[in-house]
Image (cartoon, rainbow over all chains, first blue to last red; front, side, top):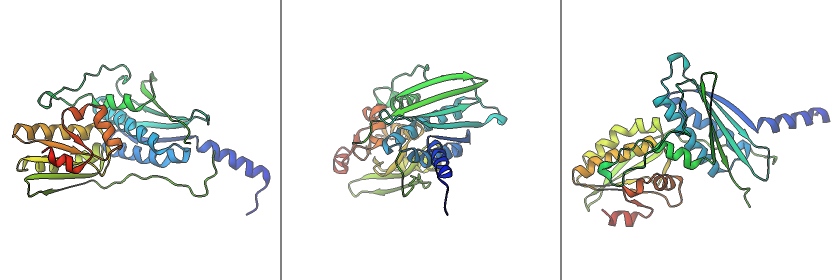
Length: 162
Length: 127
């Protein structure tokens, strides 16, 4: 089907914008966390995010959602979690920012104190590993509290593949 | 931004599986595949606990084909390792070298609690 040059340009621009940003909403449940991961694996490759970076985002997303599900004390009517993925336009320092917004009690994963894991098995209480995994896989983490919502932004960067 | 003739996407597996075999040498290998996130861990938790609890002595947990490991999955592994140790048994973990799973277990310090191997023969020798 023939397209006029103006339409083709507009379509190309719209497509370019569409692949720089994606949004989704899930429920704060194990199934919601699985759906969130599926969304990430569907959207991030379309933004030219390399596999290793998506793996890191996957871990951060799973741990952030696990914290919300376990600790946020969400009201039954406030189970929705908003997700957004924003790819930076820079080609020389590519990165992607994943935003996670929930309506739970205030919790700042960037400020929580993490106790180190015990050095022997009998003493090990495996709490706090999620925060260690979140912090070690993200290149940057930022938290904001706005309008009764927690907003966590996870940034993962990578170098252009040679 | 490249123009892709073929649009690819990566999908995650929805199938969680756990199986086992008992070696003549007396250790049990428990193999877990799929995605050990909250749902995945829920799916296999009971079976994993039972397989560890009923092993004769030692257990090798084979995570070499595991797709994803969340902290909740690590929690289940540690819980079962502790229970096994209390019964006088030993757990070792087998992972694929260079995998995200290996990196997670070393970054969190779990490898200091439960021996981690990338080679099956070395893992067996440690039991």
